[in-house]
Image (cartoon, rainbow, N blue to C red; front, side, top):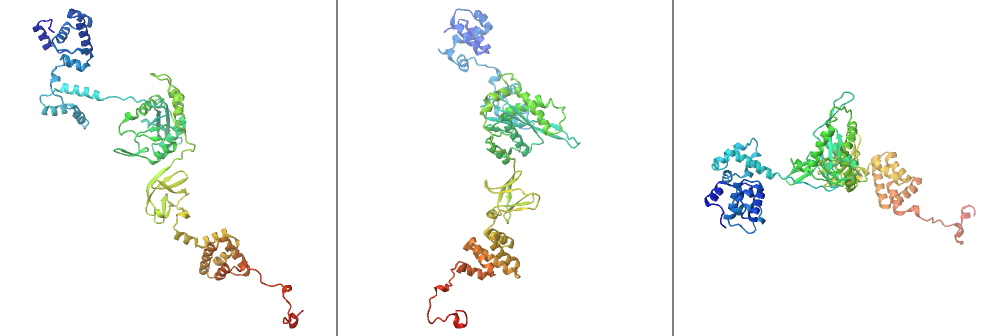
Length: 530
């Protein structure tokens, strides 16, 4: 198609004019151009509000270039390529650096864009200037900053964190004050907020916050999104997160799990960050001049103000936090466990002594003797001490009062130690008392009444062994038979057990049954009564 304009005029327009019109205006000009090829460029200029020279330049491209049939179906990049009206500015023709390299270098301490530009220009002297360098880098940075909007499911996630602002709790008697830490929890779907004050961010207080939070919600979420404080995460290596065992035990009790955020990635817990901001502005700032004399008093005030915050209407959504929670999210939470949570502390890698006992607060607790010399973990609650080996509980003791106590289960001892202890006089008497009164009298004779107590102890031990062989009931019968006859010797007791004379039949034949015979002289022969 030939140009309706003089060649010199068209060429000068195209050479001197780099079309920087928005693509949507170019499309409209092209539509009007093809709609009526006879209409003037001035008429099209009045319709679209673009200078006549720009209209002439674009119409020249449309008439001089090989335009594809599907021009209006092309996207913006293909449209520009088809018309050949790319931006041919000086900055576009000059070489630009690798912006990823610039970004990486800017993360280093004391880095500046000017220093990086100078280093790069020393290698590439024909590259873009400093102003284009800074402008293009900022443009590239904005392109990388893409925000992902997360959609939260009811009852799925609870975001938790401590507020940066603390509240002073004073002592009534003039003692030292404490800076109470404010725990903030936010449900992902309803944005329902919970606040709780504790004296510190230690593990017991961290667990107390979760226990109080779940009780307030009346249920448990599927995940708890937490920061990387030491009360929650012990260490974080590449691809592996080690939770604090006490925290893991707490979440396991409630039937939920932790989802720690990445290190220095606050956007992964944006709900908690926003919740903390709301708490600091709407609650903590307004009580900044209040005087609190106990943490309980502070929590009562926080509870009252939390209700006000949750009842506030949203600005960009209908309803309030409380309304969304009550209508949708409360029912989606998992039920609370029936048993209350008992807070616990852990000690790891405690060595079992050669006496198969572990030490805790100067008291000693037994383990199975097979674990002597090995390392075990101790879980300590308010009333019990649990000993764990390879994740399995091997002993459970009640906590001892005071210091110096030794708690030992008999089944933890090796057989040799058990026999030694059972051979002690006190243990023998306790055993005899369980068998019967006659056995007790027999062993008291050997352990307390005999002059040679050494042999008496040996006899008592032997009698206990015989009772195990023949049965304790049988041994009690033998003692009942022997004691009235003053039989206490060990050999005599052994003989009775073997021959059972106490069970024999009386072999005396009644006189009426004796046969009469001439050779039987009778008692009269010896001067007695016939």
